[in-house]
Image (cartoon, rainbow, N blue to C red):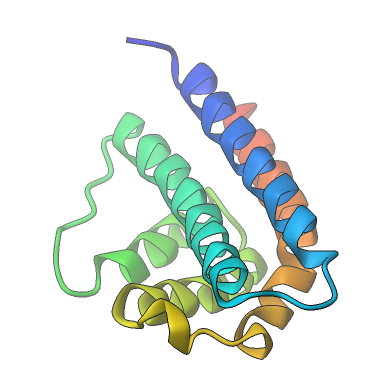
Length: 140
């Protein structure tokens, strides 16, 4: 099995590619329903990649996240409680988590650009903060 740092880097690379795809669609003035659904998918992928990294770190540290109806929310809390991420980052990621929940339960044609704009606008800065948090944690 690959080392934790290698698994984390692979996920970070995937999330970077997701951000590149978001940017391609974001630049278009008029977006089709399919393009909006694609943006929503990429925002969902963005959050899932972050969650995958947190899961891998917690697993490596033998910190259990119990599978429950709230486990997606719990992983952020547990990660902050164990100093994997800061409280500030946890709060930033909560918006992406809320969108993830909406996305999973919505039909693609129901997604509006306005529902995603705030997340799209801050995805790059949240990802930069996430990488800083993870780097700091892994090098302690």
